[in-house]
Structures are given as structure tokens and as C-alpha cells.
Length: 342
Ligand SMILES: Nc1ncnc2c1ncn2[C@@H]1O[C@H](COP(=O)(O)OP(=O)(O)OP(=O)(O)O)[C@@H](O)[C@H]1O
Ligand SMILES: [Mg+2]
Image 1: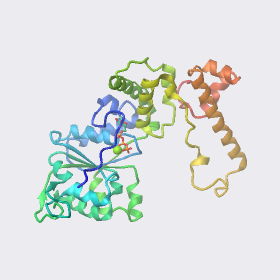
Image 2 (image 1 turned 90 degrees about the horizontal axis):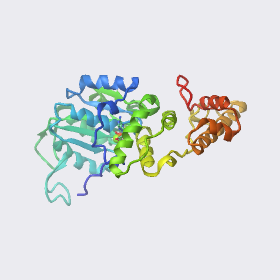
Image 3 (image 1 turned 30 degrees about the vertical axis):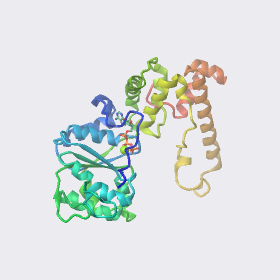
Image 4 (image 1 turned 90 degrees about the vertical axis):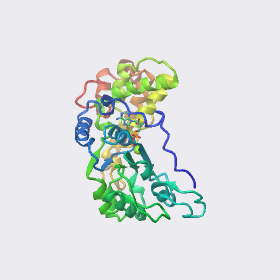
């Protein structure tokens, strides 16, 4: 029997490491609200559904909850429903008895059994196939299940936390996810904000990651400059906390060049909404304006990087006034409109 797919490897030495609360939740209103909600339920065993984009910290928060749950002395058992092929997932989850299929020479307990009096973390639950959804529903309802090829019914007591970066209600509408299972696993739903929705936390996270990677790589480096931190705070971070963490790992390894600018994924209303500009009837003038704005933004970022984020030098290099540069930085969305100048 092939072993279960390995957990995704993270630069941070696996997500089994849980940062302190002030790092996990930071000080942003978005994450403080999440913290408040979690505090109310972490001591119970209600199923929780963690939603949020890739890299927003769904697993980190699930591990945090486990450590504060009544089952903290049990195991935190992660099953990545997307990484294990459907045919293997059932035996991985529920185990099998000797002789259940060719190659089943010995009986093997499934992950649900390992999670007895612990937490079962079903990662990327939307990838579970319909047949297995039925078996899981049964288990979620009363904690009972049978191993493949087994006749007796078993019972385990576990906290179930599921995670998804898809909209499960849409999956239900598309006929890919059982509504009854959805209602069972989402007694309590937590939506984690994107990093761009919690910019207040970027600096503390960056400094925290710097410390972690310095220890991990056995390498000291200069503190990240205030100007660079401010710059990082205003980047779009489509890969969320994971992307920031990887960026800081590069900084510890190679220094300031780690902040080299890649062209941004298009994020403007013109480029992100569905259909082509023609089918959506966008005026040519708006398209040209947007294209210039995007080009300018990339050039400004490149110039800031080349000039070690010094705005005066950047303005000189671009042969524009300092004021014009600040205006353009704001216009390009590189700074929150409430915030101070970059
Ligand atoms: N709030 C946080 N505090 C500290 N580190 C975090 C936080 N959120 C995420 N990370 C770090 O970012 C990386 C990704 O986090 P995690 O695996 O928890 O995200 P995820 O939402 O489960 O991602 P995916 O959807 O891709 O599985 C990990 O290295 C984790 O340590
Ligand atoms: Mg995850």
C-alpha cells in the first residue's frame, strides 16, 4: 500500500511550527476579528471550516486551534484531499482490514483512527470525490465508520477542521459537493483575509520571518530597512503570507536583491473582470490609460529597487520631481491612500 502523500514542504520547516499569537493574528482589524471568533470556539469540539486563498494561513490557524482545544493532547492529523488520489484516499482515511484487497497483507488503521481524541484536519476538502463525501458525512454525523473490508463499526471522538480555497456553495450548485456534508462541516466558518487585507501585519510578519530564517539558515543579516518594510507593506502579495515568508527567506540568503520586482499579475478592474475588453465594451481610451499606468508602475518599482528604495534618488533617475514620484506611487496603488508617503 503506498504511503499517504507527504505534506507540502514549506520553507519554514513545515507548518507544524506555530508562531506566537501576536504573529498569527497580528494587529489588523481583519485578523483581530478572526482571533476573537476563534477564542469563543477553540475550547469546544464543533467542526470548523477554514476558508481563504492559498497561503493565507488556514493550516497555521487550524494547528493553533488544535493547541487550544480539549483534544490538544491527541494528535493533529492532516489529510490533504487534493494530494491523495481518490482511490487511495478512502483507505488512507478509514483504513483497511487484512485481505480487503490485493496487497492488503496486514490491517491498517486510517487517519481518522489516528486522530482519536485529537484533531482531524481535512485539507482542500472540495477535492473529495462524491462517493467519499457520503462516507465522510456518515462519520461526521456520529463518529462511526468501518475500515475497508471490515465488518465491525468503529467509533472515534475527534475535532474536525476542514479547509478550502474554493467557494463550497458554488461547488454545491455545480453538483460537485454534497450540501448535507457542507452543513455538517461548516457549523462554524472562518474566512481568513488575504495579506493585502491585513497590510498592518506585513512588517511584523516580515521581521518575524527574518528571525526564523536566520536561525534556520544559521545566517545573520541586517534588519530590513524601514523604507523597504514600507514598500513590502504595499505590495499586492497574491501568494499571501506564504509569498511574504518565501520573500524574506530569499532576503536572508541573498540580501536586498531578494526584493527584485516581478511584473505584477494584472489586478486592475479592466484586466481582471471576465471576458475581453471588446466583449465588455471597455472604451479604447480607458484601455490605453490603464496600460500606461501599469507600465509606469513596473518602471517605478524597478527604479525604486535599483535605488535601494530611496525616493529622492529614484525621482532623479526617472527625471521627475520628488512630488511627482510620490503622486505616481500613490496613483499606481503602491501605497494605501490613508498611509504616509512611501
Ligand atoms: N498568520 C500567520 N502567521 C505566521 N505565519 C503564517 C501565517 N499564515 C501563514 N503563515 C505561513 O505561511 C505559509 C502558508 O501557511 P498555511 O500553510 O497555513 O496556509 P494555507 O492557507 O493552508 O495555504 P494553502 O491553501 O496553500 O494550503 C506557512 O509557511 C506558514 O507558516
Ligand atoms: Mg493549506
